[in-house]
Image (tube, rainbow over all chains, first blue to last red; front, side, top):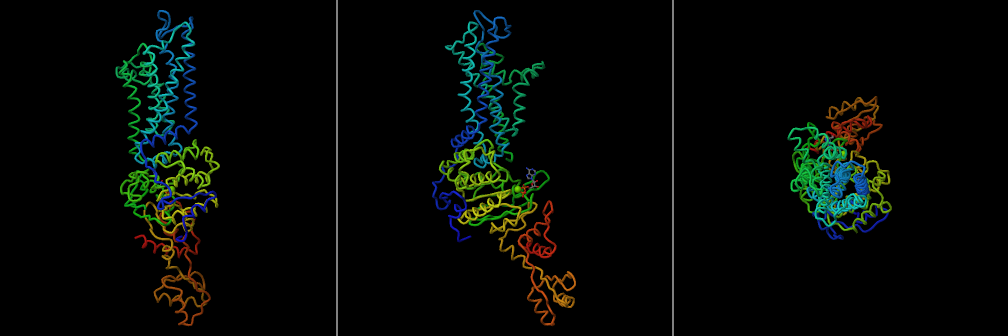
Length: 289
Length: 322
Ligand SMILES: Nc1ncnc2c1ncn2[C@@H]1O[C@H](COP(=O)(O)OP(=O)(O)O)[C@@H](O)[C@H]1O
Ligand SMILES: [Mg+2]
């Protein structure tokens, strides 16, 4: 073998270019792994999957569709209006009703969050990712940053689109006061709710590693728990039920307030977003890939 | 350069890797050989930090893998299991890996060309054939132009063209001065590719040797003698300290001496010889004998005639390993 030269490598393949050897330095040395580079890499991964874009299309479609539906139902004069019923000259909380349409999209974005990690376990590409970032925690930071970076503008568009469509349908039944800071705070709160559930999905993906388990637990927390826990009157169960992500979300995505105060609602969402991700990062750090 | 020291990996009661120490040095292809379940994949995963050793340590290019600033420029790895997202194109998979290390886009195009995936680089990797997937894996491994390359069973399932391609590629990489560590459960494959061998069975080191040494270590090969006076010759050889087995009438299998010595003894006593030759133990037979006790499923025993020679090879080899 000692008589072979570096050309052998390229001669072995049909289409060839010069292949530099590490010792002859034809390539400038790579700059090294870093957090910003990890973020760029995760962005490439996220944007290069069709499932990412499908998820967003579905989330947007569901939100706007339900916004139109809810708006049509509550502005129908014959309909009963149990929540936010008509005040003087219209509905008390037209913004809150329009944004309540996001509830189904939370699950979709939660699935997107779960897929960001569980999709890598399912396909085995997690090994590639961990070999590129063997310290591991930067991978979690980068995935979190990319998901938040994508979903903050997206959920803003989703919330505003829902609100706008609803405002068109309300007609005389209600008006959305675009000049009010309460409206915009409700929109921001709705975004926070959606992003928090997506991060909850990411955290569950890190903890459970399979899409099925992560999505099951996610659906349990977002959809199944509220009606079930609502049947129990023990204080501590009531306390838990009052601090589910959906309760915090609807408390914020409203101009009239909800079960939780603003500060408590924001903290609750932060907890749902951060704790599973942090726990998942710890698990990732300790367990075999 | 890979240096493993007293690596141990246990899964519950099962010890997958058992006090394994070895060094893989640059400049040649080192085969990592052992039957299925011997602990090769587990060892390789510990080298690149995917699995944590129960005890012991391993360094690559002088440091634990995770401490390298640009891991993919130090070590390129192809694992046994596919490590590519099915929904992503080959190009995007490589680009994401490159971006994480600050490797330029030009290098992505280069490795795609190098492995011959140019035409399918923008297609989803989920639709790739086994061979294309393996080429993409090799492209990922070479992306950082690494000094050390680790490949787990790279030829599994490849067609003969693919096998030849990988063999030539690996030799070329080693000739450039890189450390090339390739696992296989087939000695026949390693015999054609590797110069050095680290052989394991049931997680333990059986031999750390070169292909040449392994062959010559099987020097105590049996000598086959055909003679009409086989009985007399046999008695003479036994009294001279050799071990003699009667194979059939007129045929002896002699160990513990050489064909030359047998010829001399026969000449001294005027014994007629019809045939005198040393059995050639193939590398495959030496390997089979070496790993016989550690194979989890024994299916492919060597032919009966070779067994005596192979066993002698095993005895020798345990000395090499010790
Ligand atoms: N994650 C795991 N959990 C339990 N046992 C494992 C695990 N990974 C490997 N093993 C066991 O460890 C042994 C070595 O496996 P492996 O390293 O894959 O061997 P090889 O690659 O040489 O075929 C096998 O008996 C295998 O069943
Ligand atoms: Mg294996």
